[in-house]
Image (cartoon, rainbow, N blue to C red; front, side, top):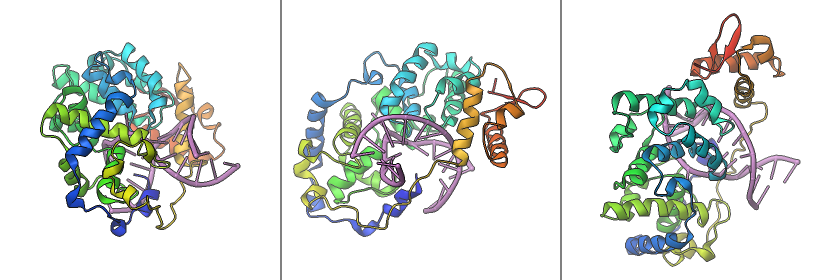
Length: 313
DNA sequence: CATACGTGGGT
DNA sequence: TACCCAAGTAT
């Protein structure tokens, strides 16, 4: 989680006008589900044709990447690699190449490794069990719960940044949640979670959608919110964050940008690239070498012959 | 628990 | 224009 959020968080910032004990969780769920019924986006991984595998692909791509940028690559991946085994049988470098400019390319590598594990250890089927999912590369607590919930309709608290923000505002009256999921977040999530699995799964996706479309981080559209009357933050007058200033995120000139530049060169080349061709595109030679070494260490790049580099096989 | 890890569009 | 931040995970 970005450090700038840590500076934003203040545990004592809770300003609760509505008595938390009086919060009608069931009503919040019911109203959110009704809203979702007409307001939900028609996303391809939510359609009936979606498979556990295509849903799993979407979850990897959506880790820290906006929906709008995922739509096209997702479609291409699903057509090209319709099963975990299909991806596992392809070179991991092709997964990295097809990842394109989605960002955080290690996700492509992890998804390829997860596909390999599914092919080899799980009869080619995406596991439905949360704890088994957790054992796959690139699958953390959020993604495991999301796959189990969305693909298999299991009952799980699915805690993403949207849900935590919605919960925090409605129940605690604070503008922003903790920088990362806490035990308190989970406990709160349990309070909302319907007892019937199918309803719980629908609540999971609906509460995420509420956070993505209405209860947004920057400019929440409270006038269109179906649970406004239950919201502690709204009742308190939507108090703005008045804590310490956030630490700006910089990208220009960072190792991240440098890694991205080097990997971009390999993605666009069908053949291995000579060291000089690779490194000359970055002004800071030392930094470029450091980035190259870290890409090698991560397995995003391999040494191919004499002083040449390529995507992994 | 803090930090590293890409990228691009919204405000 | 800067800055914010988006369905997180691994270390």
